[in-house]
Length: 289
Length: 337
Image 1 (tube, rainbow over the protein chains, first blue to last red):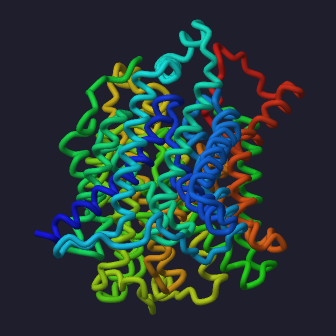
Image 2 (cartoon, one colour):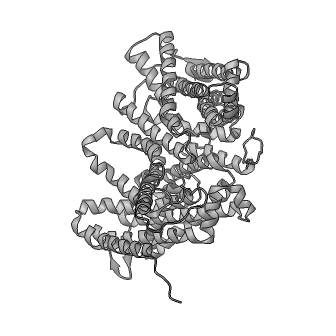
Image 3 (cartoon, rainbow over the protein chains, first blue to last red):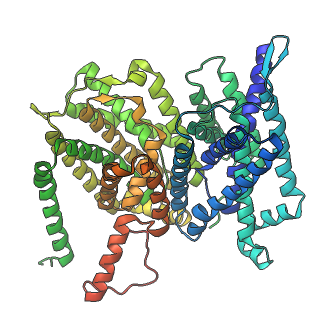
């Protein structure tokens, strides 16, 4: 029993991490219609930046968070103006996808040049292990669930309740009409990129104490993608739930197999695609002519 | 009735004849052994990249699946020639068949998705196949790989040196390129282009979109499987580390650099990207960084690749000298290479 609880908590916390990546991707898909293959590298950058600030510059937690958030936002804006902006008028969607692939290589290499290719260790927020009977859980897992939940709910509130969120949604739904209404779509797109980069960056910070900080953190993106596709086409809520599901499935699959852990996750994805190609929350809307 | 020979065809024929002579006779005699091995690798990748020409250039679908089918073909070939000891040609055909069969089953599922979601599902496929290649030790040899695979041997003639391998690879590469060029003019090729340009319009014209896409997917997989088989017989060795997602993105970039819709362009792209690490040696650890930046700039300044640039110049030159002047009706499509 204890083991199942432990697996569930680990699964949920990893799911939260995937959800943060998936949400960032979905926000970008909705706002600019671009599948960002560099999201995993933004995630990795989050781990490295927080490592640099908290370990190398030994900042206190609060200062580190503020500076890191500013850096993430700048990074998001820079990313938008280098990868998306020059290509926005391109008629061929493949060009932007390839460009994000190029960007992912660039970010990975920059990280390698600055921090070297040897993985580094990031200390957890609070060290220690929670023991409840037979259950042993590192506090970091609980932190991930807590902070992840906070961020996800926060993003929902931002988009649903706040004026700026509605403006961003309007711009995402119809750029042309939004501009007619006087909404600056440059600013809204930039904000979306900032939020997306921050979500990924904080995710990287949260997960880095559990794994080592290395360039291979970028591969987390694939699980986020899987969660997003399971959830539904461009649906934020679906992406979060799908990612949580992916996390739990991955965690429980270790009961049967450890070597094929990744394969199980993607197999589930493909099964979902067969049964319900539009994902759990996607509506079947045919393409507009 | 006597058929008038077009000057364009004449020029094209002459140029390709010279190019063929250079490729077959001059290149092997002036290059070092090391250079030949690098070139051999480039041709193997080229065959796989031709699959991307079919998928992306003709069908407009971004697919990363090439590497999975390359792996399937490679392991099929390795097993056939190691465990059953079949001749090279049978092992190559076997690799093509196995990867086509796999593509038919996998494609039937994945092609229910469209656009971005199809792209992502191929990424998932690459992850699954990589994990299977690494862990299914009985068939793939796991991370240690499989060695001692026989070299190319046709009708008792064995290719031993890189030069001789080069001849085999070049011939296969040219045949594949001709196949893709021909494919463009067939019913399937035209249907595929119409699906790329406008799916709904294609449907109205009576094109079975799903089946057309599936056919393209299977053809691309066949080319990738053949590339895998070539790789196995060329290197005499295969390991799971060759079939990573990174390699797959390199294929797409190779195709895009050259100009995705044209086999010649793709060839230029493949050779350039394979040679890049050799040329940029002084940059050392910055090579990958420069490469990534290059890809980003490439997409901004010449999304149609080198071939697109080249045809653009040719068009301008022709307009200047009034050769083959045609009256254009409507807007000329920039997508056609």
